[in-house]
Image 1 (tube, helix red, strand yellow):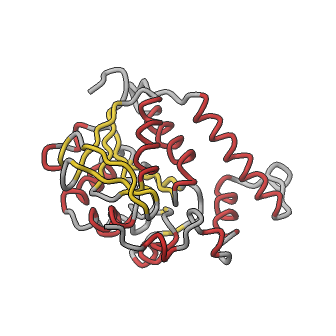
Image 2: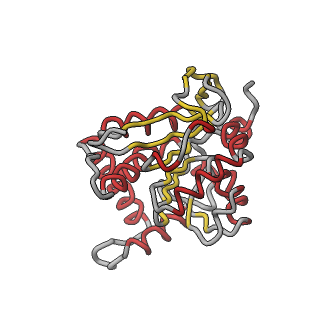
Length: 251
């Protein structure tokens, strides 16, 4: 482990959404963290760019060679095929539980909350995900919110690749607060946060409110933004692809 920073595990099965894999790794390394890619199945990995094949990668370790005790945070990238395979791996589910129980950051995006559902780790938690698995989360007892990022104690969740700047920023910020951390929030993450804050302020104003004038708390803001677009399915799309297209098989 790099003594000057934090050691983060990125756990995947295969056919993951490439942006949700590469961009957190890049952001973490830029912030001074050491990153280990862990595969639940095999060393050779295949990324996807939505429904098209992306690049190939090589895992640093297989899951049965690694221990959660060696890492300060865990990232679970999305992709429907990846998450659907990972959710039935008992060791992967246990890793998620171990990080939650140890109060270490667990960052989960897109379809990856399926792992939490299958691990019985959703009940009573507030989280977000790709919109097509909203019912899975609510049926498992979780509170689903339509936000770019949702934080529940040490659990960080986001909906889709467009949310990655906020997702990465919150993960790095949470890591930087840990004792002995040398992980830094640089200009890029600060700029991404400022841009997201300005966007949310604009959405609040479009509803006819002013945060300062109306004394809107952060909790009130989250609830207002969560309910803003629930009736508009176009606002829930992760890209120019519809749900049926994203779910199609790409073997």
